[in-house]
Every structure is written in structure tokens, then in C-alpha cells.
Image (cartoon, rainbow over all chains, first blue to last red; front, side):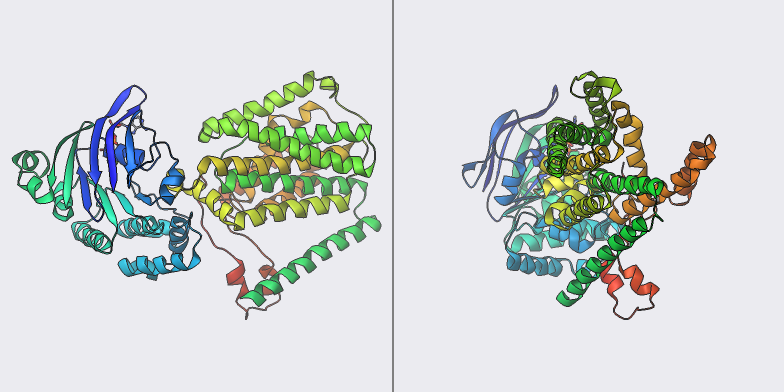
Length: 234
Length: 333
Ligand SMILES: Nc1ncnc2c1ncn2[C@@H]1O[C@H](COP(=O)(O)OP(=O)(O)O)[C@@H](O)[C@H]1O
Ligand SMILES: [Mg+2]
């Protein structure tokens, strides 16, 4: 279980996250939706240790990990597929996936998880030897998710996996996200595509200029007039 | 698989031994005369400098303009030690003390500056090399701007060869390890590397330290060959020259750096007789090469001994495929 308490984050003098609190229970898909610039990416980066909060506590399975390094958090089971995919373009698909398991030493486990990733994304298996930079946008997104899975996370952070993808691909990616979750990985999903995110998520939080303004189950929020007006285009 | 690699290792060994013996024989026969030995020495030193800078800039993606600074630390350390202890032991002490001293400075400078990116890092490392030069101009033990004379000569083909092969092996083995993979990941995408749990600062500093260590060795070999040192040898242009070799050979290609170091030194030896026109022709050649091969001679590919296989018409083993790692490369400098 991941729990965030009163987290404040600044970029210089800009107060980007204003004391947000939320939690993700084991086995859930929780989504954080919000407009561009609301602070979604910053939230994920702070929890995975790439940005230091000024105040607040991050608890993973009840343990305070606020002061730990990004490496330590990967070891403890947080994995982050960053915004914009950020695959390693001049490495092959396989090399990218291997780097996802960078901190692991258990060779057999890595081989097993590689198979698991290929089961979720058969296309990656076909493209093993191909340079990642030459993959299509959708394939690169699959690689980014697959690579994040290779660290065998307890909780997987996905930052806008639907960004820039054709609608049928978005649907496919979200189906896979559901499958990954069913296979036992907890997911914290950040999206601008609110309708898709709310459909797959068990619960959701709405972030507006650095504050959580609303929360509820996916279906509750989908029914909410506020959400409909602000995020679902109706 | 294993057998192929063993075969490859044996082949490498034979290739190295042959190179060593042939050059040694040419020196005995005075075909490589005193003048050409200067060229040979410069080539070996430039190979060490270029391969080590390639680790920092080509493989780890950190744009450094400070290699002359690290080189000068190795050079002065070795000179000062061998002037007081003109024995082979003093020479070894000088080379290793120089390398370690350069690595130490690399660590001290790298820790704060490697947080900087791109152009900022280039300027910071440039500043560092200038500071080192100015320190050497003002120190008593280095005899200031006049420099040091009559440094005992211990550097010869044997030592050049051993240290050159040693540094190249050190760096290629490092690159093949998971640490090397981490460095390349940083070049490819630092934020993503961070997300994978790679300690990016640590690896940037390690690349910097290894690079500085090898540059220190190169400097020490230099001091122990050319009798004479002064701070201005290690100015901004010296760092740029090393960078030229790296870029020309291909960022991210060890064999490219080696080829470019050989090629450029041979060209400039040839051009010696053209006196004034020399620099113009040299510069023009660089421009032309970069126009036709903007990714450098080798891009980020490597040549290996498989080349000889194919030259011999022996295509059947398919080893070339194994031995050559084709990677395209974006020149992120
Ligand atoms: N590196 C940065 N330096 C300064 N401001 C930043 C930086 N990254 C993000 N911000 C600012 O923080 C706010 C939140 O950004 P972000 O977390 O990327 O939002 P989202 O992911 O919801 O679009 C924005 O106003 C953005 O301009
Ligand atoms: Mg974002």
C-alpha cells in the first residue's frame, strides 16, 4: 500500500503540489486525472524519488520512504514508466528491457519476467533485436511499460500512456494495463484522457493546480457533473 | 558460443603480439627512425587520450573539454618524480601517481560539475583545465611558465604499447559490463536511466574518474618521452584536439577513436613539410571528413578482427555478425 500525506513540492519559488494526500491500496488501479500543468507528473516523480518534496510523508507498506534514494525505491518495488516514453533509442528492444531489470540479480527471475512481458506485448518479442528508436509510437509505449515491469514492481506508475496514440491503440494499451493489474501489479495511472482512465480505474483522484479537489470510485466520478463538464467534454 | 569467444581471444592476442613485434622490428631496422618514433609516440598517447575521452563524451554523453587538464596533472607528477628519482621504479611511480592524482582531481571536479548538463558542463570542465594550467604556471615545483627540462626518458615503444593496450582493455571491459550499460543508458536518456534505478551521478563520476585516470597515464608517458614540459602545452587547444579525434572517429566507438588517432597523426606528420599551409590543409581535411561522415568515421560501430576474416574470404562462420555490434548513434554532444 502506498500512502501520501500532505506532500508539498516546489520548483524554485513555484508551489506546484500543495499538500496533497492520497492512497493506493494493493491490487488497485488508481488514477490521478487533471488538466495539463496540474502537477500529475510532478506527483509521480516525487514519489519515485526523482524530485524532493519540501514537506510531507511517503509511506510504502507502512514504511516511511520519504528520505530514501530513487534506487532504493525501485528496489522496494516502485517502478515508473515516465511521461513521453523515454525509451533508450539506440539500444535494442531487448537491451531496453534488460535495463529495466538493472537492479535485479536473480537471473532466472529476470528470464521469467521477460517471458511475462512478451506475453503482455507479443510485438516486443518479434522486435527484440530492433533498435527501440525505430519502433512506432504505440510500440515504444509498450516497450516503456514492459521495461518498467522488468523491475518486478509491486506498484507501477504510468504517466500518460495514451499520449499521442491513435484511439484503437489507446484501447489496446488500456486493455493491457487491466491485464497487468489482474496479474497482480498495483497501478497508479496518470492521465489527461479522463474518460479512458476512469473506465479502467477502481478509484480516482482529481488534481487541480496542485490540489486534490475530488475523489471517488471510477464510476462515481464518471457520473459527476463537475467531471463531465471539466474533463469529459460534456 | 564459448568456443567462438575463446577463438576470438586467441586471435586478439596473436594480433596484438604481431603488432608489437612488427613495430619493434621496424624500430630495430631503423625504418621507424627517431623522427617517426615521435609520431608513433604521439599516436599511442592520443589513442589513450581519445579512448578515455570517448568513455566520458561518446559513451556516457558528458561533454567534457578538460582532458588536457587531467593530462597535465599526470605529466607534471611523473616529471617531478622522475627528475628526483631517475630510475625505472621512479617512472612507474610517476605514471601511477600521475594517474591517481588526475583521477582524484577528476573526482573532486566531477562531483559538483556533473550535475550540470551539456554546454554548462563543457564550460565548467574548460574552466577546470584552465585553472590547473594557471596553477602550474604559478607553482615553484613546476618551474612556472618556463617549465621543466631534462626529464629522464623512460617511455619507449614497449611501455607505450603496454599502457595503451591496458587502457583500451580497461575501458572496453568496463563498457561491456553492466556499469558500461548504465553509462550508455545515461547518454541515451538520463531521466529514463534515473527511473530504472541507475545512480546516474555515480556513473557519470565513475566515467569521469576512469577518463581522468587514463589521461593522467597519457600525460605521464608524454612527459617521460619529450624531455620537456611547460603549462602551455596543455591549453584549450590540446583538449579540443582530443575531442576532434573522438568526434572524427565516432562518438561511442572505441575502434573509431583508435583509427582517427592514427589517421590524424599520420596526416599531420605528412603535412610537416608544408609548413604554413599545414594547419589550413589539416583544418580543411577535418571539414571535408565531417561533411561526408557527420557521424564520424565509425559512427558508434566497432571494427574488430572480423574484418580480417572477411578480407581472407572466410565468411562462413558468421562471426562478423557476432563480433560487430551495429548501432546507429545520435551524436548528442
Ligand atoms: N523542471 C521544472 N521546473 C520548473 N517548473 C516545472 C518543472 N516541471 C514542471 N514544472 C511546473 O510544474 C507544474 C506542474 O507540472 P507537471 O507536474 O508536469 O504537470 P502535469 O503532469 O499535470 O501536466 C507546471 O506548472 C509546470 O510548469
Ligand atoms: Mg505530465
